[in-house]
Image (tube, rainbow, N blue to C red; front, side, top):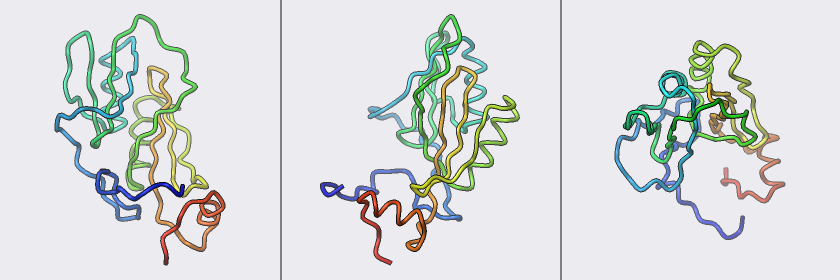
Amino acid sequence: MADYYEAFEISPVPPPGPDATPPEIYRGIYGMPMFVTVPTPDLAASVEFWTRGLGFIDLFTVPGQVTHLRRWAFQDALLVPTDGLPAPSTVSIGFSCVLSQVDEIAQACTALVPGCTAGPRQMPWNTVELEVITPENARVVMTAARPLDLDSAEARYLEANNFTLPKG
């Protein structure tokens, strides 16, 4: 981690904290530096789950071909039709959120598909994570950063793994 520099100004993710507010949904068009493509046998049901459960918007749809979903800037997912239900994923797709959204997302997803969430759980790298298995068997992890207590086990874990911590 010695050859890095802070570039938080290009990220839509707000500083962690109990009062952190999520940025607005980003509706601009840009060259996507990263996106995920999720095959689905039921495009309408998948769009419903991703929008009502995970908090995405339908940025645009080409009927029968693709639905481009978005949350914050650089959080893009393309839903594409397929004939059969894909096998459960061994890969996780991670999206940032803020602490106040974790329980809200868990409740919304569970209301749509009971039993589709695991967590939330606190992770040693100072986040809270909620795992969601979507109707198309994608494993989505919603991750919210927590404020860092410099005297915590998480801070010791990060230091032990060569992360530079802020000076208190």
